[in-house]
Length: 295
Image (cartoon, rainbow, N blue to C red; front, side):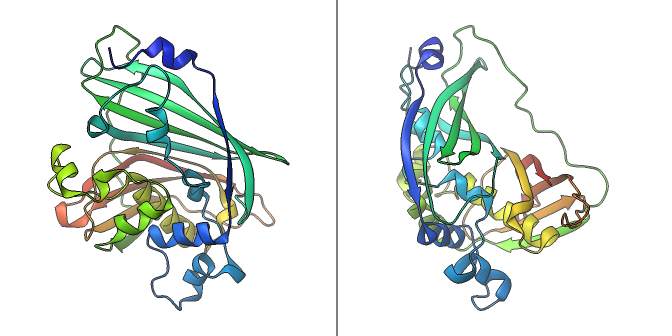
């Protein structure tokens, strides 16, 4: 059997050293669509090293190398075809703001394996710690088609919940560049699904699709810019479920429910609900069950 759930769960954490600098942060920001217009002061805080803000979702690519989805497939007990793999969800918890320069240890292990009957779901957790202590924790939920049926625990429902019924408090539209996936993949995710038309067709898509984590980063940028004028330190946690694909060239519409005031004096905290859809496909859901918790 390609997935040995017991073996994957029993495997020791894999620890690797990761390093990054301003150039990596700038490349990531460009990869998720920052820098338009290029001379806008609000965009320069993502692209100019002298005033660089690090968007927390950079944590998903810090240090380069394969993303969590690919790392989950290299765990003992897992041997599957990459064309059968989908990124189901992502959760990021920030213990401190992500610095522009960093050297840290990242320890990854599979913490859950669910049997959905016709598919398997693996949850890979990565704990990142530097010399000053914990930096962040992220979890990637990996959906593997055709690999269920071993009789394991079914786990939580994978069905996305609908967004709030009331009108959103904020709406931001963002056009995805035709070459966005080609640029984003330079931050470490070289999955051919996002660049090779033949591979995309074998996976069941009409053409290469945008990385889910690219959409994830673009949506967080929209929230941070809209609610906190680029104050990236407000983000405490960010989670989503990947509900559909994005094709480069499409327009993403990010809807937000909730507002957030400054934390300098009142330590205001709470959460914002977010939903992202593809405008050209009648708002087809792209990110669902998305929450940004702030402080």
